[in-house]
Length: 69
Image (cartoon, rainbow, N blue to C red):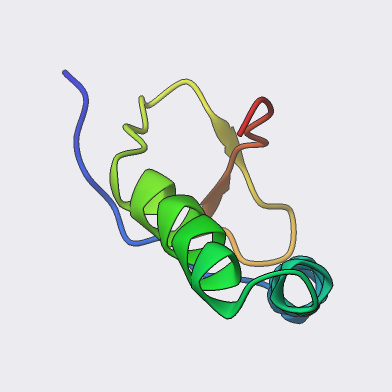
């Protein structure tokens, strides 16, 4: 059964989100906010199954790569 788990953003991921936001902010602040919010909302809908990899460093964490946003 799938369950909802908390998504923990790496510093790299946070920086990438800021880069995306700043890029779109030059064209439209509202558009940048919309895109940022869509990305953040998408992370709240991720369902993790037990089969995803455990992180080698932090064994209590699992990792998954999501493409196609």
